[in-house]
Length: 253
Image (tube, rainbow, N blue to C red; front, side, top):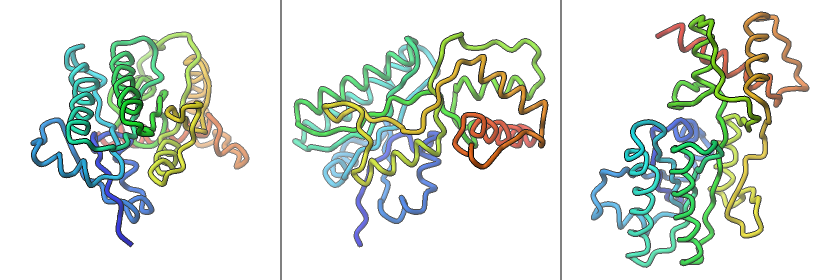
């Protein structure tokens, strides 16, 4: 069976590295990496051949201008190329559930561009507003506040500073991969009537204070930390896996 071609930006991102390791995804799709430095003459033919553009490229760090270029201008450039050549290529885009930060605003601006493109071209795009990620190999997720918190705890920093007192959504990267796989197969979990915004079904709501309490309990109890099988998808279980993975990583570096 011929594999469907999927363009992927941000192939070195945390989510992409996890997704591209999935055997079922590799068996069904051929992923073609694109980046902002790619020559337009090379990129345009790929836009015509692709089933989706999985747009994961982003920047959480750097100056506001650098985030603007990465999270807005590059998205606008891709949309311009698609429309200039009269293609109707659907985007699968990872936006943000972060608060009113410069990063969050830049991601939402990128989302707005994709939504407007979808309305003009009558293309059904797929947009995920991702919250705080958990999961194994979290060190790959640059500027993740959960990673920074656990790293401080592993380094024995006594002055733990929590990002804020608000309740946030947390989701495991494995659940993100499952949902992106569903989207690639045309079975995205839509959350809005216009079928543009999609959600990751396995979400967890918690304050940073609660997350800190769970992590401290994990450290205190060590290997005796209770992980009953009937709570395999609990926030506690997923934070335990996240912590243990980072513990192993920082023991080697």
